[in-house]
Image (cartoon, rainbow, N blue to C red; front, side, top):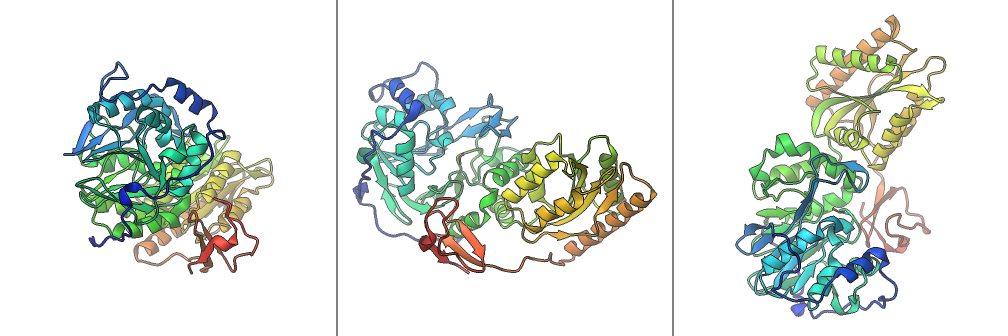
Length: 502
Ligand code: FEO
């Protein structure tokens, strides 16, 4: 990659503007109060906890302090994570000491054991807050109380968030950084780059220009807790981790494809030898392979020419129709056809599989004159995650008034670049001779479409709309014109903060 790095002014020893927020009286909440109560005066070099450290060396002067949580059932109280999750944090031991993000409140005990051991009596000079979501920022107040000389470096938006989440003197500790600012820590030169909406608006990344390491915040993270093997090249990532990485990206960040594309464009201008994300393994080999996955996911490009069949069925009629179609697809030469029951499969997996596959078949019974509820919820979630550019086929079932096909199509028609293959197949309670023939015909059309995709026949794209980007958070508005009274749905600023980008 191009070694040229976009940089601006040296942040003079971080003597730039200390952020003035009134705030001590505005903050906090119960969590912050509890954290302050637990915090003890800083005593560098003295053990604060009775446990043992568990750290890993990343480079000669970079230490992994992260902690895995395998007890947690649901990440963000939504996503099942049978393999757990790690909250990654890193400590740079240069002439200055620099902590990159903290951890979730569930693992702060181990985290401080690690931090204290790794510092080995040294003071903590900087805490870089790349991301303010509490799974990475819950220990900020405790860090400040333990290391009162620490300087917090973050985006301007993160400063207000710190004041919302934590009861600390942000005017004393907080320093804002902007695109291209640099910090010299001795041997290392750290450069800050903004990454709004990957995955919150305040997100930034930090690039260590000395060792070519990108501290990428949530980007390039994954569900799953590393089992001692800290690096992606130490595990069978493609066979054992990729599905969780895809499910993590598509569900957590999938909605913000344009913003991720912006970050990938910035990354392409950097010489990157290592990526240190906030979840999951560190990347030091085959980085281009993983970046390519991100490029596909964030541009809503199918990862594979493959068919996903999702069905919603109560008494088995729709399930049978979906099964018949899948068999015919296989007979026609389609490989790796995936069939999932919408009622039993967590929606996060359905979302991830939809991002992976080029073709999606949706088979739903009619329920209360509408779409079977789990199928409707899935489709609305898919729409909310901004999926685009897929071929789809529909199967509806209804014993007296089938309606789910038309209603599913109404949702899919609102999603850009979606193209229906064939006609909707209608099943009346159970598959009969007529609907069996229709399923066979639909399978043939899907096969033909698959072959067409393989021979580079493009999907019909939605007409290109003009685009405006929010200069505060990066949200992209598309349409014929930007209404004068428009407000950003993400950060709330007005139309005057938008710039036209196409
Ligand atoms: Fe892992 Fe957006 O927090």
